[in-house]
Length: 209
Ligand SMILES: [Zn+2]
Image (cartoon, rainbow, N blue to C red):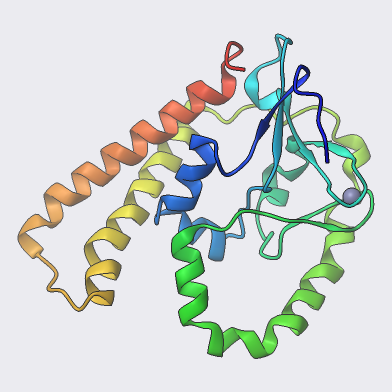
């Protein structure tokens, strides 16, 4: 699909936000458990004073529809394990894959691969129902409150802490260093908090193109 580069900035895996999504092991939980996904291509409208979050579009490669990315906000932002459902042509918009998720999926493939088609079929059947009331959703949902961002940041930090201090050392057969846990927890919580506060600023910014 070709896009008018004067109207839209095109985001792919080469953008730092997407690269962060691919590299950050903390997002494995979001992707594999919560089913939060990011389309392989995203567009941001230029030359408008709408805030960043309201300028985001996701193109469907099957029917060429430009969807406002708010379609996948709220509960529709979750459970997208097999990709983003296009409510226009019922196709699946391909998504990028987090690197750690990829490794986890590869290692655990004997457990899920035999059921993949059945799981995908049952997931797909539910999508039409989830996306059928979209006509009423014309505007992006109101931004999350600062309290929600703070809680999200702390949760994100906690997940990073669990991965860094327990899951990765266990996978690498290393000893868990009890004496480092408190410092590690503090760093992860602070890191998570800074990350989500930065995202809050970034998503509501009107200046970024
Ligand atoms: Zn489509």
